[in-house]
Amino acid sequence: MNVSTDEQAAPQNVEPAGMRNKILAAFPAFRSRNFRLYFIGQIVSMIGTWLQMVAQGWLVLEMTNSAFWVGVTAAASTIPTLFLSLIGGVIVDRYSRRTILLWTQSLSMGLAFILGIFTLTGTVTIPVILVLAFMLGCVGAVATPAIQAFLSEMVDRSQLHSAVALNSAIFNASRVIGPAIAGLMISWVGTGGAFVANGVSYIAAIASLLAITTSLAPARTDNENPLQAIRDGIVYTWSHPLIRTIVLFVAVVSIFGWSFMAMLPVVAKRTFALGASGMGTLFSAFGLGSLSATFFVSMSSGRIRASAMVVGGILTFTFALLAFTFTTNVPLALCFLFISGLGMLSAFATMTATVQRLVEDRYRGRVMSIYLMVLMGLMPLGNLQVGFLSEHFGTEVAIRVGVAVTMAATLFLVMSRKQIGQAWDEYQDSAAA
Image (cartoon, rainbow, N blue to C red; front, side, top):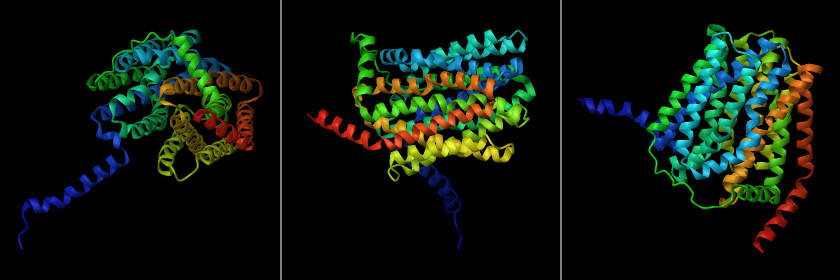
C-alpha cells in the first residue's frame, strides 16, 4: 500500500505541535506576542545585570581585600530602594510604563558602560564604584514597580498570574546563568569586560520594548497629593493583620537572611580558595535552587497551605545555610546552597502571592510598593551588618548570626499564629460591618 508524502510527514508534526500546546497550557502568558518579546529581552538583560553584580563584588574584594567594603558596595546599589520606591510607585501610576522602562533601561546601560570604561582604563576607585552603584539603585527604584505594573498591559487578565510567575522565573534563571558566565568572563576579559557586556545586554531589553505595541494607559489626571496617597497605603498595610505580619517578617529576613549573598565572593576566595569561575558556581547553585522553587510553588499551588510553605521554606533555607557555613567541601557546599535557594524562594514566592491575593485593588500599587521597599530596600542594612561582623568575627560567624535571627523570627511566627488568626477574624468582621 502506497502512502503519500503528506501522510508520511503528518505524524512527524504531531509532537512539536503537541509540545507547543502543552507549553502554552502551562504558561498562558506566552500566548501574548508582547510578553514573548518582553521575556526574551528581559532574560538577556537580567543575565547581564548578574554579570555586573558578581563582577563588582569581585573587583571590590580584589581592590580592598575587605569583606566590609564588599558589603558597603552591595548596600550602595540597593539603599535607594528604601527611600525612593514609594515615590517610584507614584511616578509609575502617572506616566506611561513603557516610556519609563525605556528611559530606565537606557540610563542603566549608560551607567554600566561608564563603569566598564573606568575599569578598563585602570582609573576605577572605590568612590567611583559607590557613586555609580548608588545611581543604578536610584534608577532601579523606579524601574522595579514599572515592570510589575507593565505586566498587566502586556497580557490579558486571565494570563496575568502566568506572567507574574514567568517574570519571577526570569530573575531566577538569570541568577543561575549570569554568575556562571561572570566567573568565566572575569577570568577571560576581566571585570571591566563584564561591565561592558552588561551594557550591551540592555540593547535586547530596549529593542523588545520598542517592538511591543500596547494601548498605553493615559497618565492619571487626578490631583491627589502624592504624600497623602503614600500615607493611605501605609495605614492600610499596617491595619491589615496578615499583610502587616508578612511585611514585618519579610523585613527581618531581608536584613538577616538575604545578606549572606554579599559575602559569597569572600567565602569563595577565603574558605574554598576558589577563583572567579568558582565564585560564579556558588551563586549559580543558589540560583538553580531558586529557579526550581518557582516551578515547585506553581505546581503545589492549592495543595499545600501557604503558612506551611512559608515556615517550611524558611526553615529549609536556614538549616541548609547553617550547614553551608560548616563545610569546606565544594560539592557539598553547592548542594547546601541549592537547598537554601529552594527553601528561600519557596517562602518568598508564597508570601508575594499571598499579599497579591489579600490586598484590595484600590491599594494594590501602594501596598506592593511598600512590600518591595521592605524586601529590597532593607537589604543594604543586611549587607552592612554582615560585612561588619565578617570583618571582625569571620564570615562564617556573620552568616550564622543571620541564620539564628531568621530562625528565631520563624519560630515566633509559628507561636503567634493563633493571635494572628484572631486578629484576621476581627479585621474581617470590622470590614464587613
